[in-house]
Image (cartoon, rainbow, N blue to C red):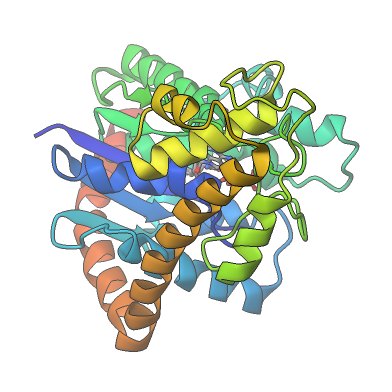
Length: 328
Ligand code: ATP
Ligand code: LTN
C-alpha cells in the first residue's frame, strides 16, 4: 500500500476551507493509502500564540479530524512535537537549505509584502521543518492545498540533494493537489483565500461555528451584479466559490447545480448552499461533542505518537549516520 502523509497547522480554529481542501480528502484517502496525519503544532508557534487558545485549538483539531471520519485504526494520527525527531531532522534539513530557496517561498514573502513586522526566524525556516516532517516518513504522496505545493516541492528538492550528496536515503514525495475545492475563497472577498488567520472575518466559516451564524455568513456572501448563477471564477468569483462549496459537499457536479438554478435569484441559490453547509456542520459538530467528552483524543495521540516515533527514529538515525554526526 502506498503511503500518504499530511500535516495541518491549527494556528486558529479549523475552517470550511481546511475541511474541503484537506480533512475531507484525508478521510477518503484512508481507504486506499496508509495515512499518516499529524497536527503541526511546532509550525503554529512560528507566529505568536496565546498558550490557552493554542491548547484548545490543538485539541479541537484532533477531535475534528476524528469527527470528520479519520479512523485511528487505519491512520496514524499524532502531534508533531510528540515525535521529537521532526525538529531534529528539521535542523539538519535547514543546514541543507539555501537561503535563496527560503527567500523564494511565497508564504513568507506574502507576510513580508503585507508589511508584517517582527517575523520570526522560525517562520523563515519553516519550509525546512516541513521538509523534515515529510521526508522522515518516506511518503509517496503529500496531499496539500495549492498554497502549500511549493513547500512540498522544496522537500522534493532537498530529498534529491540529500540522495545526491550522501547516497540513496529519502523517497521523493509527490504533492497531491485536489482539483475541485483546492482553494475555497473568502465569503466577504472572493478574490482572497478563506483563511482562519483573518480574525473576526465574516468571510470565513469555522467548523465549530454556531449553525445560525454559519447560515448568515453564507446568506451575506459577496456576489456580483450579473444576477445569473454561473461558474466563472474570473468574472463571478463569489458565485463560483459558492458553487464549488456546494458541489464538494453535496457531490453534485457544478454543471448540474448551475442548471438547477439557471432561473433562480441569488437568494434562493444561497439558501440552498447554506442548507448543504449547515447540514454538514451539524453532522460534524454532533460527533465532535461526543469525542471531546469521551477522552478519545488523548488515547489516539498516545497510540499515534508511539507508532510514528518508531518510523521517525529509525530514519533519523540512518540520516545521522550518513551525514557523519553519529559516531556509535
Ligand atoms: P491560514 O488560514 O492561516 O493561511 P491554512 O488554513 O492555509 O492557514 P493549514 O491549517 O495548515 O493552513 O491548512 C491545512 C490544509 O488546509 C492545507 O492543505 C491547506 O492548503 C488547506 N486549506 C487551507 N485553507 C484552504 C482553503 N481556503 N481552500 C482550500 N484548502 C485550504
Ligand atoms: N505547512 C502546512 C502544514 C504542514 C504540512 C507538513 C503539510 C506542516 N508540515 C507536512 C504537509 C506535510 C500548512 O501550513 N498547511
